[in-house]
Length: 409
Image (cartoon, rainbow, N blue to C red; front, side, top):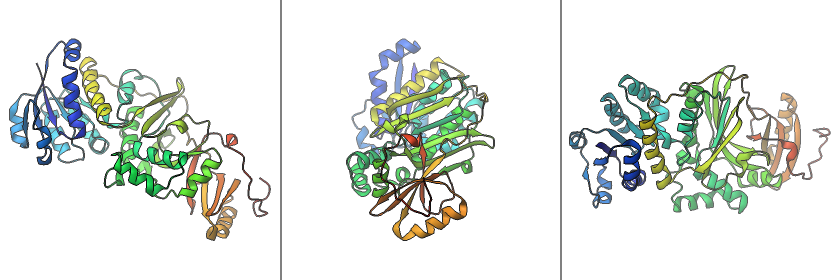
């Protein structure tokens, strides 16, 4: 008998409970053993939700621990504490833990993985990145010796939904944020999504799988979508660019670097066509060129399915470890152009800036609220600036602002 302990009974925890019940026969066939949900630990406010559950439910940590000799724990409560304490306790007892908690994995994953190794068990976190996309275990299982030079993706469904609505239906940032909250895509406090923390946690986890070590927090830049104005999106759309919140990490000559930032994608970029709450992940390497993974980034069913599949994967492939190797080349930052947005009042200052810094202005485009300039990439712009990914020669042609200050374009 495989005795399961479930910590948390919110949306994800409830989904795991249902998924385990619905797959009992398949699990028995695969693992040659029956599965039993022995106990569920809930918060007070979740207790009513679990009233009709046919298993032991408690709000007491001590009662939960004493209920059974668990064979696996599913952690679905979110945040760092008490999730870290709970997870560490079971790993130290040699009990495997499956988590969907991206913040915990990103911030304490190195410690928890060491605990798992030291106590001959495993810590699974497939569901912590991109919901229903099996990216973590693809890296652990099918790509164990494949060198990866860059990983990038759209890892936050909330902001991707918002930006898609702004581009395709010409809606305002404020309007689509309110709708995202009404639809349950964004929390009442949307800070983690809007400020890029959610994607920042996830790309750090992917970096660990792709490059073999947990990255330094200071090596990963983060910028959210809060400063994107409606007219920035309009100018980008006019040129055929689509704005996305892109998370990426790459191996450079200074070590692993990464960032989360809004970016404009040209029509040549595969991730440009990832719409709505869908997530997309791109892996690049010398032997695979580019692999693209698309799927649901969140949701009760998708996330619960990933947690159960994560458990099955680890039970059937003990000691699955990705062996990272150096690629044939170092990966430079993949963007060589940026989009700079300048309000009319700042135009003279912007002209002086490009002159002093020797920045090449490739093209300029007018809007009644300001101007958008495509420039050779520069990370120290005093203006609102976003990287451009892809071939800018494929952009739609618009009438440029002819200005003697720039010379011929």
